[in-house]
Amino acid sequence: MGHIEPNTLAKTRKWQDVVGLIEKRADNAVIAERTLHAAQVAYAKVADDAGFREAAHLMVQLAVAGTKKDPVAHLAAVGIQLGESGSLAELSAALSQAISRRMSGKNQRTDWGEMARGALVTAVTHYMAAEGGASLFSKTHDDLAATLRKLKKPGEFAVLGQKFIGTLTNKFLNYFLTKKIGGQVGLGKPFASLNNLGQFKAGMNLHCQEASTITKSYFSGWLKKQFREHGTDVTRESAEKFMWWGVEKMRKELAARAI
Image 1 (cartoon, rainbow, N blue to C red):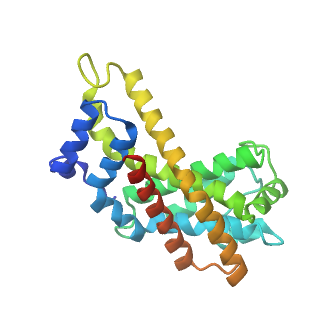
Image 2 (cartoon, rainbow, N blue to C red):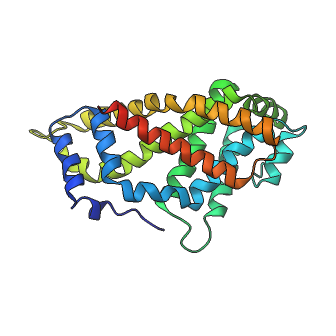
Image 3 (cartoon, rainbow, N blue to C red):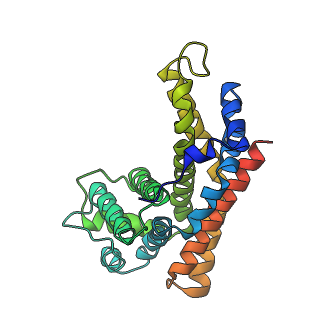
């Protein structure tokens, strides 16, 4: 697997600044922005990552599926192969497998791709449960199709997109921070206990989810424009570029919140 190298980053002045902020118990907004800044070389690589690109493509195709007469058949056509049910568990597994297949080539399986895969599964599970009322195991293809038809609405698609971006960003930050904060637990250290560390991580996740609200109008406007100007024929290239700009909007928002 292609790994991001946190040990190398840890030796840089920028990364030492992040560690210093943690030791000083700085605000999560500042720690989040400085972590992204310290890891900017690794962060920039996401645009070309096979797993991220596939996650972007499939998320858009979920919305496209909602415009089709047979949404489940469209999912199968783009590589999301469901079994007999339309349960959340089955959809999550099918999405995960579809992204994994895209990462199966030489040097294609990366930490970034795994984060994107996990973020999409989390976002879809959250959306289907909250918006579609779907349970993990007891739904049918018709139930799934009904929920997917909601996703063709720009506002509904924006809910899914926001959750994806917020979750992906938190995974990225946590990837780097975990390498250092594990040694910051104990008496006289920034985190007196594992419970305090857990609270910090929960706070960072909340910060990312709140910051991701900046992307909702972007996701909604993009889908509306795509469907108006190009119908439901959304190319991979369009989906990939669209999602990368969503990531960039998130980066800028984190920077603005740190001021």
